[in-house]
Length: 251
Length: 61
Image (tube, each protein chain N blue to C red):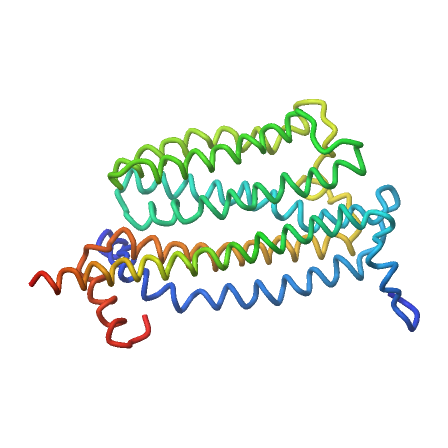
């Protein structure tokens, strides 16, 4: 099994296979995303408390879920890279960081734009908002360590360690609305009894979440392919590939 | 969306929350586009960097 793992996690094998996988994520992401937007903007009823402003939820909540999900992917990959020295795992972690940071930024900005009309302020230093901001800084820290350490192995070790330590922030974000008094509303979907949400609102929300996830899968593969090429730029497989490209072949 | 004609101006007004709703959707769109464009540019850069290295080595031989 060990050789099997190493065969499938070799950057060259990954580079060839991932090209075929990308459209299988990208096309459903587009179709489900467009349908989710249609349901969310045109079909979902007006909220009886928040009026039309609640429609920000179809961006805000999927973005916030992705910020946590991508962080876990990044931290687990970094951990696998640290422990088992699987190079592809470090590649996936490094490729995930900027995407995760962008979704965290989106969750913060849309939350702010939702907070202004509903709470009367763009920002409060409460537990949910602050811990989400710390998540953004964890992504930035990971990226800074990746780009500032010359030796790739050392960079992976240092940034991977930061990613793993930062995992403590994830449950803090999730439970922050229960542990502390906050302006932020409590969970409406991720709880054990029935979600307290109208089904016509819940369906577009879940569709958008699925579309975001598929989108992440597609772009993380694109980024990981770049990362694999870059890291192995002096290895034979990349050289042969680029020489093929210089002779006019598609790569 | 019942009735024969859909009221677009009412739709864009978002019950008075147009600025907040459409800015949110606009930034989301921008983030999606950037997440596609940036890796495509990065890919070109990586490939041309390796090409330059190959040419340099060919000249040295």
